[in-house]
Image 1: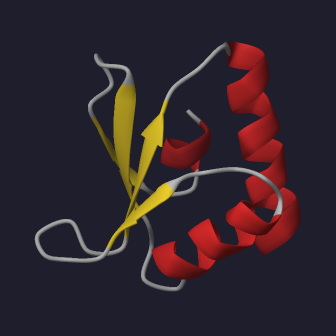
Image 2: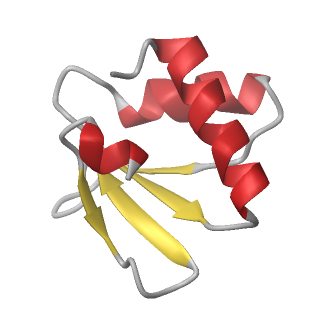
Length: 78
């Protein structure tokens, strides 16, 4: 819901990973770099057809809420 509210395309809602297509104004590489500095390991997809996407392995709701909060604070995501 967090990513969809920000206008992102989310794929794989029925699996343990999701692929999030980011708006062009947000760089997936910069997002993953900033998150890595905070101890979060998220992968950036940079080659077509998934360029500028994040690949996120899902975890418990409390962990995912923490990721969303970190994204908002680091990048003023939405």
